[in-house]
Image (cartoon, rainbow, N blue to C red):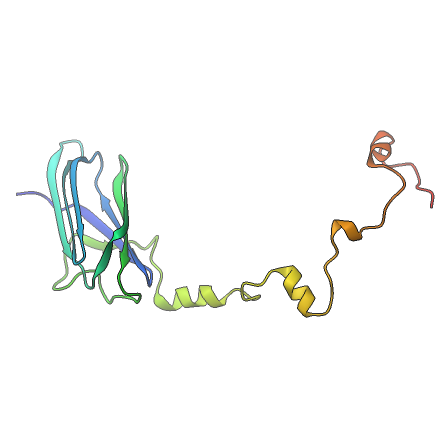
Length: 163
């Protein structure tokens, strides 16, 4: 009977992060369907058989989903078909090998705060100045100086400029 790898998960309103924590994954079988995720493969030093099967709480977009296999783990980004936060990853009962990935986790209200935290509402500084009636100077607006930077560099900037 295969062992269960630890599977970490986190979510945003539009996607799920899944990480299968298994070192030296060999011969992985990764299957993402609109309602489930299935992983099977050998891993760790002993190359024992591991398997995970998760039935998603809601439907996902298989075509947009991405995976990245490294010697340390398998990372998945799985997009939800409908935006919104799920109360849990899987339908049915709790799976003892599925854990929250607190390094990637954000609560729904945290994500909304980040979206509204931009004090300029996505506006750049020049647009803000224009709205305030001022114009932000550009290099073309700078007064021309008769002395050159090269001369300043030669004497260490000690020469007094004549106007």
